Image (cartoon, rainbow, N blue to C red; front, side):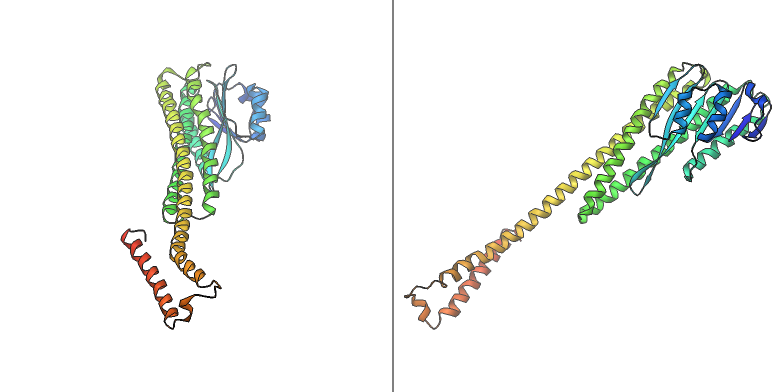
Length: 322
């Protein structure tokens, strides 16, 4: 846990966190779920939100409590065409900003932590930091969501690129395992779409500003975020639509492959059908069959059979069936 006390321009860890900070008018904290029990009583946080931080799930919600707002969010990554999610929880008021992240080895989340800490530490040098804490927290609030939106956009683009690559591969050749790959991508695209649908509602909830967390000077930033949330959701719908098109392409290619096989079998039947009739006729055991006693009967039969085959081939070639 890292805590920045703007009123005293000091940085603390959990072991050095002094009791005097409990009355600080401006605190920033970056902590793990286990640290929430320590901050729970100090900041008078609702018990249900603390449980949300400890119990990792994939839900997305934004709730206004008495004096502060709480957001439960997720960060998505694509691993082997499947979604790997990490939970993020955020508390914000005019007096404190608390970001809760579980232990991880994700480079994007590590970059997010560094970015948030760097911005928060930058305000420690400001002699008006404690009086302008709400403004600083607005900046951090925007930075957090702006970064998260960028990560979501990257995730969707990666998903789109994988679908495009699979589509191009299937134009050349379709394999049985492609169906499983498509189903996996569809499930992933649907999950991302479901998460971003919740994010698209969150933009309006933030703008309601029930706890007066957002200053009038910064409202325009969050109006822009709301628009970006909605565009991101539209992007996710398009990506999910691509997965549906991918499935249709697969079905079309499989049908085409089946038709090709049937056509080949049909051509084989056309070639050998007449020959089968001829051999069937001369395989009958009638006593009187004049051709059987004719010395040129056998080569003539072969010649007729070859002529029929060549004739069929020429007709197909002329009709461009071959």
